Image 1 (cartoon, rainbow, N blue to C red):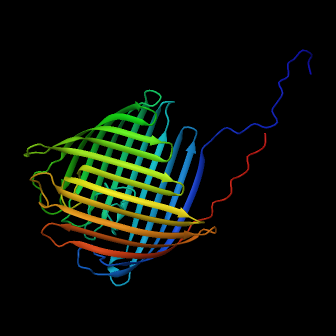
Image 2: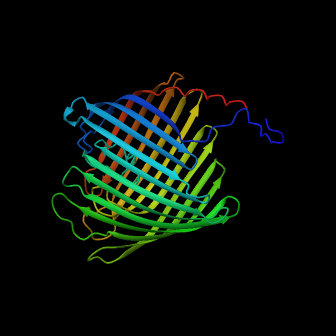
Image 3: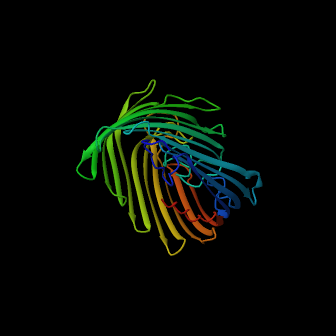
Length: 393
């Protein structure tokens, strides 16, 4: 060693540079379901349905981004009506990146190719709002794409902008296909310790068409302005309310206006969780009509106890009515549904579940749809491994 040369001591251990981390989880299930109306048309043709379903989830994290992908394939076999045997699939993906210290960009994408509808809110992956009515049995191909950008303007304030593309295609020629294009902008700021006030503006454009036949004038252009209020206390309580007014227009139609209201709340107590939502506005007609006035209320409660026991109860109500003199039904449609699920899982990954579902949907002057279902199933998901020990420094 040369005299006078400074020597820098080397550390005994240095942590590796952070790279992308990936986690993969899956679950498989086998279910047997009794359905009181497999055709979803009020004919009350019942049957037993066996289905094999799997869920695959992939999570990829890096220092500045996070991506999640979920794919759910399902094959269903009918006991009496074996011509209805089919393969359903749903996919949803989300990518979040932080370009800077105060900004965030996210991209959500979804796809579903399904035949069997269970309730008003079963389009996991893509499709439409929770107030979509149930149609007769049909093949529905739906997909959506939703980019979103936000920028923090202060300790608690932010501005945001986003877009939406959503499409729905039905195999039955008498159901109405649709495309939706949307743009939105919003901003909010702090009011007190737990509250935020703001506003948002949304623009929506729709396109409708039939494989057979033609459509008359429709309301296909909307602008919606709302004031917003948010309350959030740690992880226990969250409440978001938005209220405003919309204006709809269409070729050869007089413009219409109406109120809009949205409420979303979540509450968490120990090992139980409650969520509730209420909204009033406009929405595509779910294949039955064009743009409708839409009303929805929903609530869900989940509780866990012991080792692996869980109870889930939920209910929903929808009402759809014409906005004006447009193509489609001229009388209101309304429906209500509820479900009860009880499940138990063990440390080896094996689980059992039992559920009851009931739905009723009616339209003034027409025969209604009413059915019940009971499901018993087995599930398996690999046990979660114990965390690896952190190297000593």
